[in-house]
Amino acid sequence: MRVLFVTSEYAGLAKAGGLGEVSADLPRALQKAGVDIRVIMPAYPEVLDRLRGHGQQIVWKGRLPARAGIAACHIGETVTPMGTPLYLIAAAELFDRPGSPYSRPEGGDWPDNHLRFGRLSLAAAEIAQGRGGLGWVPDLVHANDWPGGLTAAYLNWDGAGVPTVMTLHNIGYQGLCDSGQRDMLGIPDYAFGIDGVEFHGAISFLKAGLFYSDHVTTVSPGYAREITTEAFGAGLHGLMRTRSSRGELSGIANGIDESWDPASNPNLSRHFHAANLDGKRALASSVREVLCLEPSEGPLFGVVSRLVHQKGLDLVAESADHIVESGGQIALLGMGDPDVERMVSRMGRRNRKNIGVLIGYNAAMEHRILGGSDFCLMPSRYEPCGLTQMHAQRYGALPIAHATGGLADTIEDGRTGFLFSEFSNDALWDACGRAFEAFAEEDRLEEMRQAAMARNFSWSEAAAHYRGLYGNLIGPVRAARRPEPVARRPGRAIITREAPDTMAA
Image 1 (cartoon, one colour):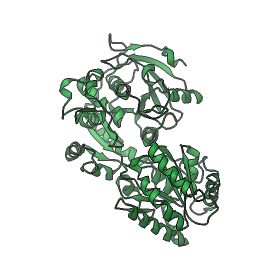
Image 2 (cartoon, one colour):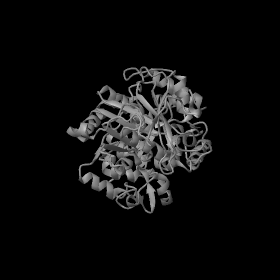
Image 3 (cartoon, rainbow, N blue to C red):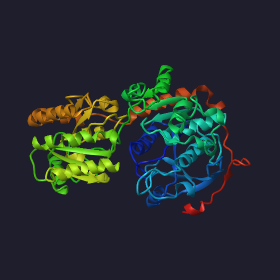
Image 4 (cartoon, rainbow, N blue to C red):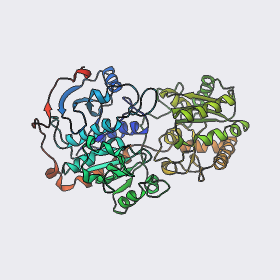
């Protein structure tokens, strides 16, 4: 079973959020399950630098031509540091620039993101049709979120019979661009409509993927139900309801990497396990010292989050004074929207001795805050899956979370954490009150921590679900659908083993 996994980010190479973690962890789990899976992503400078830093060689094997307004690209082949085969799409005018996968260093999305990720989607679709000179053709293509959304569309418009899966990680990010870019993206006129890529007069990459893919998955069973409703469907609930009614929508919960083990993770300066929490208490003291918080015997509330509206951090800011007055302290790490960054910074300045705020991201500090915290605040307005609540439970930091999406699926209220149903400051504070009560009862707190740390969030279960889904879609017509690899097709692809000038290695 051969699968091409299309993503815009990959943890350890170039990561902006949870998609990067999934793109690294799920393919590895599928490899263990016997799937020949290969990841395809853009050749950002950060990716090239990190691969070279790990001593990974990149072989530039082929070239794909321009189409419409989408630039030509080279295709590099390598292996990630964790051993997953990786194809890199190199087009200097699109990807050889600083910043995150999506944004400029000073903030704000790149204005040509539609062409950048149109190139990624088109490259994946062409490789799936045997172009590019790679000598490998997938039985199925698995695309992720809006940056890969046009993959299934290009395959459809090209008349290819390659089955496709589209995984939706967050329906709030839809990859919208002006309808005037149709010609630049090579979108046929007939595809710009309700049964196609059109969304309120614009082009939606995400809608394209959700409409043209053979099957849609999302990252938790709860979120699969929520996105069929007007409240959570972000205008696409009708399409999602239709896909669900046809049995073409599945919710498969994410897992977390096995390295999230408090007894051995190298990011923790002190290790611990459920039967001996001395190391956890030492980590709490270390976090307080780093954040210049005063010594305390009260609970430490950790927050590790992207600082965006979705995450509900306005509730944390409103509840912060109550938490401190009740004997708690807050340690926050994150970056994101400038307005949210300023809001949480003001929260920290109000009480510097008990609230520590770090704007930015540091992997070691993420581990240490979760390792040292007694509770983890996650009042998200919506949460497709969430990884932090799983990380927190493995580290004995009991989540306090809004009962939505994957949070409700992965937290057992009153046993491994605390859930609240109504999105309001009063509801969050009520859940925090229950947490303070548990903290005051040593035996109960220990019992909850042990239950949380015993939770199994392995990727193996998700990998088994995906492997079964792939098999059902590929079915008995696999050989008939799979095109032969094309070494050279005039006007379509040219093999070259020379690196593109700007990517020479």
